[in-house]
Image 1: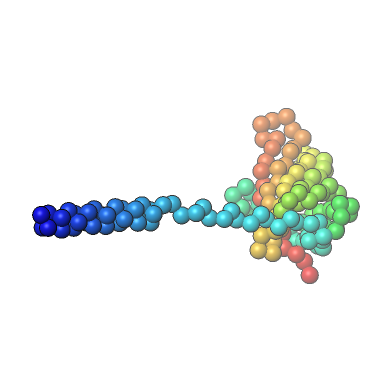
Image 2: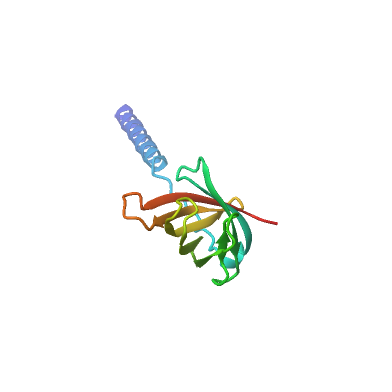
Length: 159
């Protein structure tokens, strides 16, 4: 009888050991906690971009420069403008800060890309690696299918 009791005890010990291991394996397989969400982008203030900027406008892919101009930015919504090198009169720009972006709107004014056509532009820019980068949509005053064009912009602060 004693050998039977010893055998039953041994079986019970083995059975308990297996169930504990199974529980350990399941605990190890539990999913890890979700990573913390990335921090929200810093809010961009108009004062952060105040000054003179050397700007370029490129095609949507950003692989060729179509225009260059100088932009004047102020610490508030008044006084923003841009000026093409071959023109005497600057173009007034309406701006507002929105989160990590500066929203701009200008025009209508004579297009620098399409002779004899007026254009209005609106866009959004943000700071990236010390540059002011963004996208602009040009709305040309024509009645053809090519009345809208997407453009990429990039500016570096002037000394």
